[in-house]
Amino acid sequence: MAVQTSDDHKTKESNLTGKLRDCAIVLVDCQLDFYTKDKNVSTNFPEMPNNMAKLLKYAREEGAAEGLKVVHVREVDVDGESKWIEWYRVLHPEFELSKPSTEKWAEKIDSEELFIKRACDGFLGTGLDKYLRESKIKKLYFCGLLTHACVLNTFLSAFNHGYHVYLVTDCCGGRKREYHDQIIAMFDGYILKALTHEQFIDSKKQ
Image (cartoon, rainbow, N blue to C red; front, side):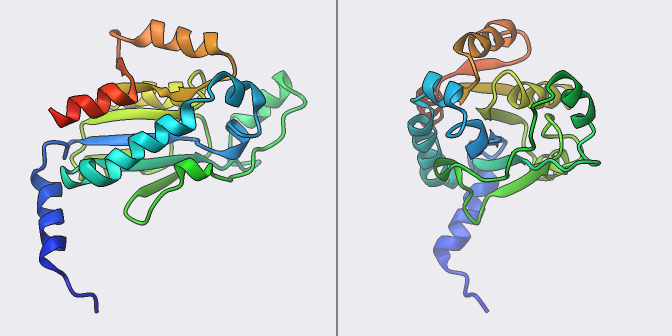
């Protein structure tokens, strides 16, 4: 049986009382098929892995001590279960199912939750909302791929579920820079607040 140390107790206590206890970083679809294997994305957003690494380093070290959580949402589609595929294949006959492989710079650690989705919306049929409510999370900081697809669908759903929505813009990417920029222009100040990873870290250190 594991022995609980005084440090373990302090960490659990800080997670309940820390200033970031109502906040979570949500990583959406940080998978090989959507970044490394998609040259449109990796070429247009070469800074994303480094920015994400910095954000996660802060979250797992300083942020975790204040109650900040990291949540992963990944796409694993299955014919017959992923209901969007039928129509999408009409529009895109060349479409092939993606493989559920994660980018090394976005891999989860044992203390972080993972939710598998079958659609663009990270809340649809995943248990994400239940987990966030049980954890008393109110503020969600979204990162991931693609800004104009699954990130968009998931932050719209978060807004409709009543969460305070933030978009960490330099930890997201799309197939075209203009798509990414248009999403930010449309929604910043409307249903979400946009910020960079450095702005997020600086604001939480104050």
